[in-house]
Length: 373
Image 1 (cartoon, rainbow, N blue to C red):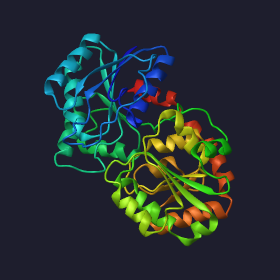
Image 2: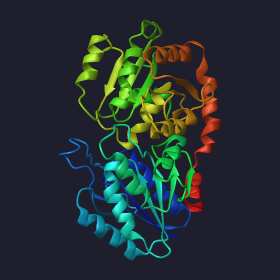
Image 3: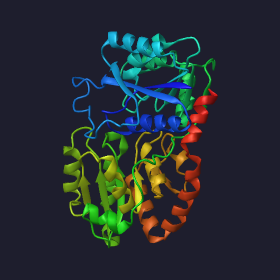
Image 4: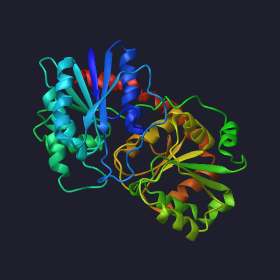
């Protein structure tokens, strides 16, 4: 097949780029011709101050990436659609994550329609964590621009019914595949040496962009539990602040956590991701709202037990007591779960569960789900 992936890719960085590029490589491995059509402007600074982040890595030599789409320029939406249409692809795949992008992506998909072209979307979210006026209208506009949808959590699959109640468009569920491109597993000692941390501590990892809905404040509150200090538990925070860091830094100071929280809040390049996961004993996602998260799939790749909250699709991916713990988004419950993990020797049992469960999250499952639609 001739396939075009419409969405984020190099020179942008982060999980969306990582997903689209990994999906493109999977299709190439399966013998298909693939091109990624990405943005010239993704997040306008006057609406998303500080949001656009560019990779310092060189362009990937094994991928064809064309920059065409401007998120706020309607002429580019049309020209991008015309460009795709001229390529006469068999399949156009669009990763959708934010209603703000619906006019650009939805218009490009409409214009790209060609006889024999199937337009499929992979849905991260339809209703975002941080809601804005017009979100539902924009989401409906996008849903109407595609021929079928793959939702990566069952909660998002249910949301599709809000915009296509008659089930006119086929849809299916396929969980987020493993992020397996962040390098090999290294020893805990090597990982800690690279980060500059001591071995005789327990480490909990919070990884990724720091946004309010991800609940770092809850995790910091949990870290203030006196049992954490007694057990030698430290928290590694690895990822950039999406907004103002001041509330978190004030919370750390107020709770007297400075010696027990390791802040690595620059962007973590791909080749350094393995050191943080391999150093950690437990990966924590104390989210207040969620659909699914790529962080769980990195944890699966590095075979790390997880602590997640009972929101969105997280409990679907992290079975409680098998690969991790599922608790309510409450600081006390988070603290109790961390104490249980380190006190009751759960690490070996949960690690075995992770190794078994990760087999579900192959990239061939995702391409198969798309191809069936």
